[in-house]
Length: 470
Image 1 (cartoon, helix red, strand yellow):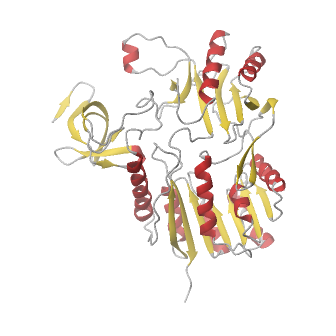
Image 2: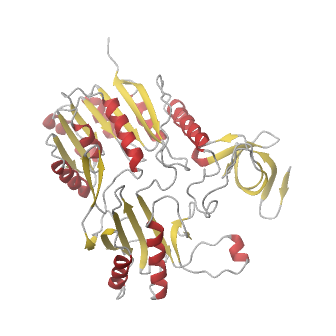
């Protein structure tokens, strides 16, 4: 039965039944109402404080683990439960994979109302920790504190870490993150300590002032490191800080800084100033070398990116005579990965710097049958563009989480390629887009790929073939 207090409702002894979407788990009240619970494992018995109550469902957070599930694992990260990431740490990896497989199937069939004839088992990641090649950390003049820390009178010190949950202005100070290999943690801790010792101010997110704002660290499998430090304003100690980081970490092969006075942390429209080292780092895949600059898009799980691209290439089923359009091409990785099997590949991407990297990559790899164009997809991919550059036989799309603009879908349908390979980091918007194509195309293969262990995110690749008109 619920226990009421002035501020909340607590549901006692709920039994967690299954894993749901977006990293939540499902329980039911004795009256049969659905309760979504975060950080829970099937089989757990928990007391839950409600944080949201609707007619058809409720959402709550665990305040007491009455009886842990037999399958529950001990979280490996000290920040688990406060940091918003890696919330599936207590779930065995095979359970995570099964949940993601089911998530993809449900979204394709329930959101897209699509027939899914061939659905391959999800490809798990060989690495389940230290698998990311890029992380961003944010600075805050007042770190996020737990209720226990506040009650204990802990000081409101600056922090350098991750945003907490859905709070844009709350930053959890991170001591050790397991997502990226070293020297990531060491670099972050060094910068924090140096700034505190030398009076460098940390960013105030609400008021938009402060010197140390955020930082990006990129790594490669070969051990190269790129560091991009973003400052809210310039200050006399800035050069000394960067010198100190470079001296302490000689493995940093590319060191940039950015001056950002905007009210958001994006750097796509800002100048990245090379302070020391090389202008880029490089990743290799099947003999191809890819340049990665400070603004480049590159799949953040390098090992799984290779598996993802192999799936896309296999679904494209190229014979050597096709014209391929690679939409949302990024730095041209998929375009170049499939180029040996095609006659021509045309890549389109919104970010101009990424397209410049794509051109450099193609030239460096000796690839001569790829062309790249920069601009908004819905503005570039038009009937006139297709008339000028040739109708595609195969279209590969890898859009951002929001999916494709309806105008882009319309143009693809008018171009009527024989085959579409849809790579997606959001199966929900993928399902929506493919539903718009379902009158002319049918799904002939589906392959989920787990790029992000211990999270609810999943990548998915679908092959669509044009329906033959009788």
